[in-house]
Image (cartoon, rainbow, N blue to C red; front, side):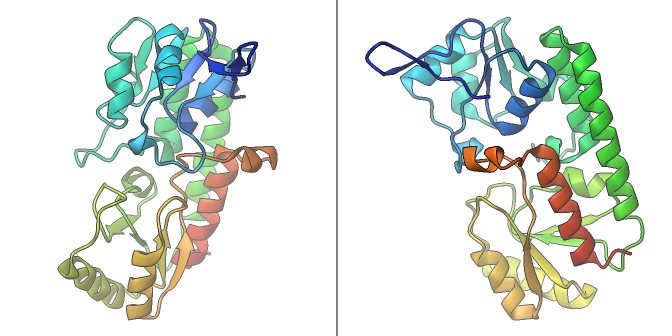
Amino acid sequence: MVVFLLTACGASVSAGPDAVVAGFYPLAFAAEEVAPGVPVENLTPPGAEPHDLELSPIDAASVRDARLVLLLGQGFQPQLEDAAGEGDNVLHLLDTAGLDLLPNGDPHVWLDPVRYAKIVERIGEALDAEQAASRLVARLQELDADYHEGLATCERHEIVTSHEAFAYLAQGYGLEQIPITGLSPEAEPQPADLARVVDLVDERGVTTIYYETLVSPRIAETVARETGAETAVLDPIEGLTPAEIANGEDYFTRMRANLRALEEGLGCH
């Protein structure tokens, strides 16, 4: 539930002192699930890359006045992190949730249900909602078990992705990520990068090149065209539109769609 408070003349104002302000969808979803009676504002608009978030003056006021500000931290949303600072109401989850972080700087920890469960537990503690958080953790444990079962017996284990966003997912389930570009979704691959990936696709017998929902499929389609592979979506789950949420989409439906895409692309039985 994203809450917008209105003035008498219809202009948006700060979310208010009882609200939780979240940097982007996975954090907002966790807060909504563990504390359904608390208003939650997701600062990243639908269809926008959370890395590129720019705060409006109203957003800045929401951050200043909120009961709790949920950030991933470590430079994932630099303008928001600068505005939030280090106050008692600010939770930097990469630093405080007890996560085992990879050295490559990939921030997409929520794509591993086990690590995401630790984020949920930390948010539950901050909102005095540990019991509700434990129920959400149980659902994440079930999701993790489904991934282990679905990816246990596959013909291939290489996931070729348009950018390097799936290291935690790959590590959790014995997969090898082969990114065409690095951590930045806006980066353009060099000819040598494309040639390297094309060679690996041919060498390993890869049949599917994955691209993301908020990024142009052009790079993935180029590699697919060069190798005869197909393309498919692997969603980093950084944001959902109101229409998608109204249709029942959420973190779990998207993660299960990702699992189906991986099972098909990797030839899992």
